[in-house]
Length: 137
Image (cartoon, rainbow, N blue to C red):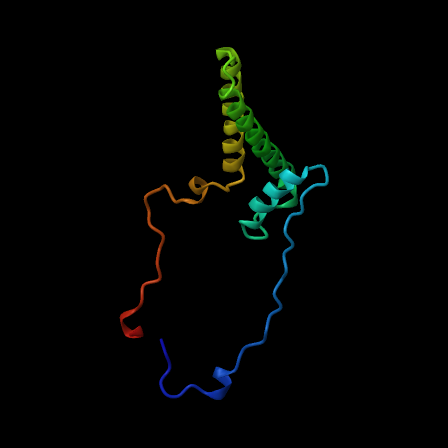
């Protein structure tokens, strides 16, 4: 409950300032290519600084490699489609490669909890909102 009367000058003063802890972001390993480092930066910078621990660096690096591999396979498919001598077996192999990379990316993203599905409450219960008390106005 609120107290009655004016707020004292002491109560209005700012409390002691607590220093903010700076959490460094996880840095990309040196063995990643420039393309993979760009994916790394996109993934790591899109989450809070403490989201990825140092122990998850190999998983994030593997995720980045799979993303770049998927891009390269997509480029191969685009080139192959325009080739009139493309055999159905070669096309099928490319599509299987693409599916394999997509599955790996989805699995790793889910494990790292960077997908929308991982961040959504699926239980049907609603998050509690702070209800205002009748006397708080």
